[in-house]
Structure formats: structure tokens, C-alpha cells
Image (cartoon, rainbow, N blue to C red; front, side, top):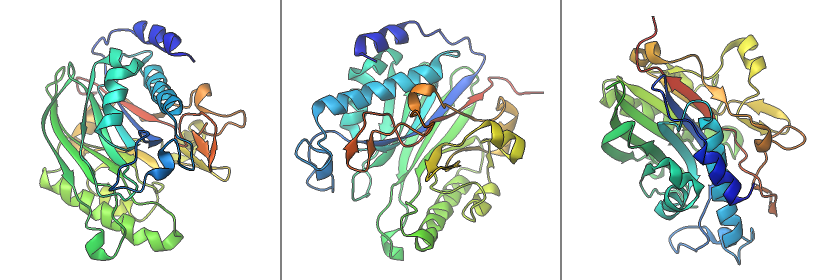
Amino acid sequence: MCRLTILAALLLLPLRDAVCQRIMEWNVENLFDTRHDSLKEDRDFTPEGSYGWTHGRYWRKLDNIARTIAAVSEHSGWPMLVGLCEVENDTVLHDLTKRSPLRLAGYEHIHFEGPDVRGIDVALLYSGKEFVPISSRAIKVPSAVNGFRPTRDILHVRGRCVTSSVELNVFVVHFPSRAGGALSSPHRMLAARTLCEAIDSVGGKGVVVMGDFNASGNDPIFRPIYERVRSVVPQGRKALRKERGTYCYQGVWEFIDHILVSPDLSAFVDGTAHVAGYPFLLTENGIPFRTFRGPAYGGGYSDHLPLYMDLSPVKKE
């Protein structure tokens, strides 16, 4: 889809009618700029690198992200919040929100530079008309002192919903990779404990957690998390048959991306989270249309599908 077509589609989006406040989560798969950061291992994502990451490919990636957020927005207006995983820095977030077709949405962003050696972080986009940030911080996972490779920070943003005046504590996470199999599980458990401590520090109220956990909902890392927040991804066999998951590895679909809310927000949740499995996000074989498959450039969107859920401005009876 060309940029003019994307712009035209965005201009036709409806204004939000305050029926719901949409929250979206997406691992966008390696959103790097084209410049080398001497402090990070990002040479692959430069024009001379192994991925041949040119300006043209970079801007196509931004257009693809804009198109996807616009599709999630189609029937309810722009999401109030968009949690993103695998973004490199403020530059890519500025280009996405101010220079790509997504600029029409008027998003601002919150991001902190983290310790991940490749340079990928989490971030939060927010609509200033619907959400007013009060404070934000980066929460370090104590990886190095526990003998692990540094992982992504947990982003915590406290803010107020304009429509409902509900105060939210939003946590965006990207837990350690599953590379290494069972040996990597303790690292994710450490990240889970760090998240739980952060939730406890805010009294467990108004909590929304979203991101890539690199684990399905039945993984042991969720045991302490479920004591504090509940998942809104589809549960049970019938519900799971309707939703294919957010990630497909060797033909097997999983929910490794999650959105969870604290018990006090459950009354505001309008149903369960949904997978944005739009046809343009999938290949002919029905799996996520990736930007790269190995070193081969395919021009797709991401190896993950987005999740979104709706908060009602009034409690559900």
C-alpha cells in the first residue's frame, strides 16, 4: 500500500464516540533506524549490514506499522494506548509518530534507553486527548547480577484516562528470549518477579500489563503474576479455537503476547482481548508476514500479530 493510500485511509477513520478506550499491544519485529549505534550490536540493521537495512526498507516498515494501527482503529477510533516491543530508540518513535502516516493520529511516546545489547526496547504511544501521563520510569531487571545477559527494562507509566478519570498503572514488558530452551526459563522468572514487585509497589490497583512475555499463559512464570492480575487473552478450548494466537513457530500457534489487568479494572473490560489477524498481516500460508525470514527480506510487517482490548468508560454491570 503506497503512502498516499495509507494517508487517505487514516483520514477516513471515525472520531471516537467514548464507547470504549482501546488498548493495543504489538511486537513490531526489529524497528531499527539505519545508523550504527557504537554502544549497541546493531550493525546488521544498517545499509552495509547483513540485512541490508536501507532507508527505503525503514520507511516501508514505518508505513506498515501505521497501516496496522489504523486497521485496529477502524471501527472505534485511534487506540488510547499502544504498547510496542522491539523499538530501537527515540528516533524511530519520532519518525513513526511525527513523520509517517501515523502522524495524523497525534500520538506522543514514552521511551527509555535500556541495556539490551542489540538496542531493542519497549515503548508506549498515547493519545494526549485521551490519556494524561503523570509519571514514568524504567524498571531494571537485575539480569547481570544474577548471571544473565542484560534484558529489556520494564516500562511503567502512571496516567489518567480523560474520559473516565480512571487512573492507570501501565506496564509494557518484553521478557527474555526463549533461545537456549529450559536454560532461559530462570531469566524470565526473574523478569516476572521484578514485574510482580513493581505491581505491588503501586498497590496492585489500576494495573494494565502488556507485552511479549516469550511464554504461553500456562508457563510457570505466570503463577506469581496471576496472583496479582488476570489475563484477558482468550482462555479455554472454545475461545482458543476462535483465536489463532499471536506467534507461530514451526506451524504451532501460541499466545506469547499478553494483556493483563488488575481485579479492580475487570469491571471496565469490554470482553476479552482480540488478535488483529488481518489478511495483510499474514502470508498465503496463513502465518505472520514477517519483515525478514532469516536474512532474506520479505517486506512484511512482523513475526507477531497485534493484540487489542477495550476498556469501557463505565463499569459493566
